[in-house]
Image 1 (tube, rainbow, N blue to C red):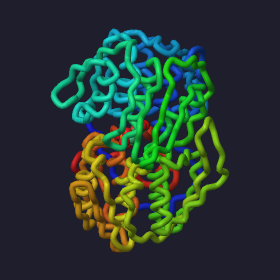
Image 2: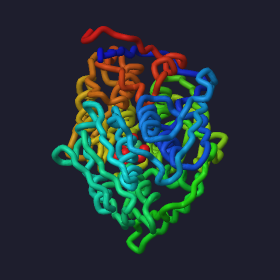
Image 3: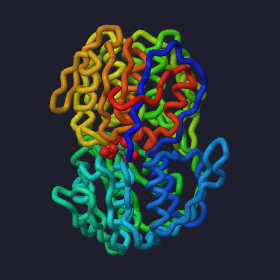
Image 4: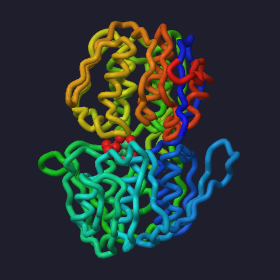
Length: 451
Ligand code: S3P
């Protein structure tokens, strides 16, 4: 595929009222759970990014009927006709999950407790990412996996309808692993439990409850959280409203904070507390962010965010906050590079196994743009000067949407433009990002390779 280099130039104030596309995590779950509910599920505001379209294609190959109701409508309405729990059929095609770790790991879980054989693959980023973290518990439940060494894609999964329920303590804080086990538990007789010592995003739990599954949570004596599902419930289709993705709103938020005199409102953003660690951190750094019109939609908290330009100062981000902002360290690092003083971020080991080695990509990109950064094995220290770094670099993105968007936001503040080598992967999570930020006053343009 040809690369799509993009260049971001310094802008004046950003202003306007906008919406960001639907939440990626919730969109995957709405499609997957809709596909195993009996009857029709109607999804409003589904993210139509490539990652989620991979899930839609896979669920279709597995027997669900999924259609976009009205492609011209201002918000996307999708209809899913599900097959019932245990009713997915064997796919005749390899399931290609593209760039999406969430689609890959959640679907492995769902199919582990179906008596079908599935073949999975993904793009050059996904085939490098660890799958052993889901293979281990799914094998304990009775599924079989044949994979490349160390559990990498491509792999074959032989599922079973005789899986056994397990109690599984997560060795890494991962909502994807938690969700894979809970989804496998749906077609497993008995109670399947996942224990997490650090709370990760709970969209699977909330979505399952929304569809009528009993999900029980309990705080254990050691403070860990146990999440249980009782297998083989009857679930029927529902209406789902997907809120705007706080991880996408994060890019507009930081851009507005960094450009003097900006005033941007982002409507209908999901503000689930297991996702809003970035916003807590930015407020500690001095950000003026107002949460208006708070409400609950389909079990998820939602608000309108008003963001005004602010002088930011460096902070130490507690490692315990990492699960609630795990996807936001690239854009936080951009904010930190423009803030006054040092920002210390710890507990970042998981960043090394995302769409790219994000810790390395952030450190290299910020250094190339003139910022002072120290990267450790699982830590990052950014020394801000109170002014944006110089910019003037081309930053490598390694098939990673969030690295691309973060450095394009940086380019809105630096004296010299910042270029990214490829913006193609932005479409996995935030289709329309460039047009949206430009509509607020941004200046992101197609560029020549290496210009
Ligand atoms: C996600 C969980 C997180 C996050 C990813 C989406 C999810 O991954 O980084 O973008 O939807 O469950 P991990 O579970 O690997 O932390």
